[in-house]
Image (cartoon, rainbow, N blue to C red):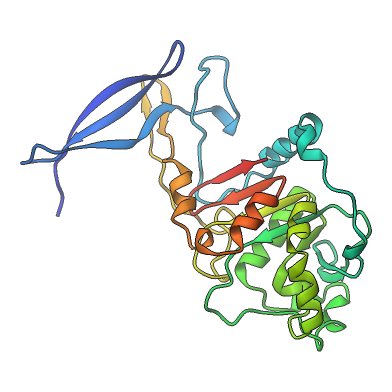
Length: 279
């Protein structure tokens, strides 16, 4: 059933000499009103930051478009300008023997000394999780061996993200810890804090209920932006606050995630609709 809503537009001033349009909707046949979570702003051309014409703009968000160039620029700014982010702890001997995925050679290798690696924070869920075992150590160390394995979509997409960002090594718990070796499981779980603290970047997938969900923007994500034309200017809605998406996600309900989030120096957070960078 279609409802007719009466919309009242109100100008907001998010910044000096800048205006955005917000809406309040009057619910028919009641005295209730609903305030839209969206603001309407001019759309930045070519997904850039700000044009010369408008200081405050919205970015066009496409359903499937991982903008690696933009994210690499965020990392470059962080590398060159943020002392706290670049001051990682010194390499520790306990990392000797740890494993990572080589996303260029598509295999599992021993972590090179002082290597810059990315860590994955995600949800296993109630699926038959692919795991590294004693029987698979030698099979998966050969270049190209992971190309013949049916990887969970989230891990496969995390590999793609690393490739697009030029980050060679990826640490994933299920594939970098020998899951049927009690000694190795104990050793690495006791050092989980160091693994995330030492990581150059942590990819956080706050979307989906299991590891088969995939990463939005590598996979298709929900289209929630509305675009239009007004007097020759392309305008569009800003997206709702992502904080609520993160807090309501299955990822946020896991006991491990507080540690994984808090100890990471750089976080690339994927929700079902947006990507956030936090450092």
